[in-house]
Length: 77
Image 1 (cartoon, rainbow, N blue to C red):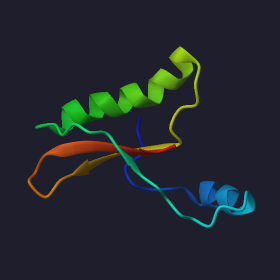
Image 2 (image 1 turned 90 degrees about the horizontal axis):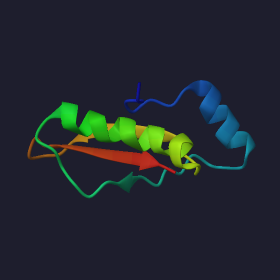
Image 3 (image 1 turned 135 degrees about the vertical axis):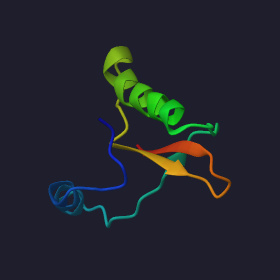
Image 4 (image 1 turned 180 degrees about the vertical axis):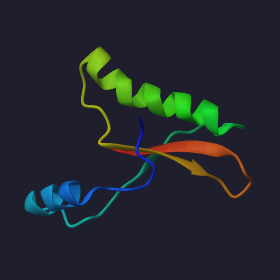
């Protein structure tokens, strides 16, 4: 299942130990979808592509809703 906007306290502690100060730079996927289901399929694909193709998967994937009511996907590298 994908994360929906929440970072666990353990993850926050790990980030602070690494020297990261909690600055999050979201990367937005360019396409907006009409349904949350479509955006969810893309979010799951982003999570799974890392181990299938052998590169680092995003640490955090989120579905968001735009002001016009469409759904998009953003993630933290």
